[in-house]
Length: 264
Image 1 (cartoon, rainbow, N blue to C red):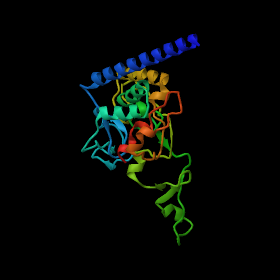
Image 2 (image 1 turned 90 degrees about the vertical axis):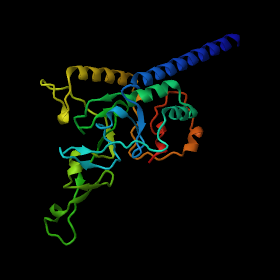
Image 3 (image 1 turned 30 degrees about the vertical axis):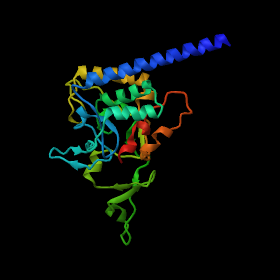
Image 4 (image 1 turned 180 degrees about the vertical axis):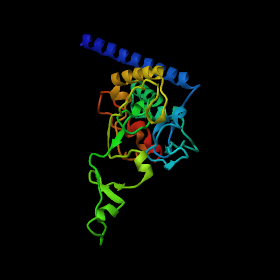
């Protein structure tokens, strides 16, 4: 019994040390990035994002428009009054029994951004590596009532059979901005010989090598740094934060738990 008690004490001591180390790592991560970026929350989709990349990131729920260059713009909308405070966010996550290790990799994934995806052409936050949207079935366009044999060709509105979402045959925004009811991993492509990237992005060899380093770290901590995909995450009441299930003893990725309940 004495040996068992000593073993448990050593295990608890090691866990406490790991917790302190990850708390220090998190503080240093935020301090190191403070001069160039900060963690912000979008009022439209509720997700966290790196403020320095806001003009190049795509929000799945923001108002969409096409600019003078023909680019689709759907930017995150920063939360206003009372706004988002990172320290309050950390307190909520700790109240939900998330470890400092889980929180560290959660924010690491938010603050690191990868080159544009070759499928959807969107800039990729490391935390959303598995969020490349697609529809597993093609849209169908039925003939309009009273139309002839070629009636289906006259219909601009159809449906995706996989989820019932409305599809428009002719829609400039949907042609340029990929949507879907399911998600897969984004696909990154290295720059060509001239250094050009996808979608007009310019990517140097140094930037590509840095992205490969981020991707390598992300692969090693995939279960914690990459948020699980949820097409339509349900809002969670703020006052329910402290009642989150804690039955699992393994690492828990911070997905919907990241505080999307603050804004819909």
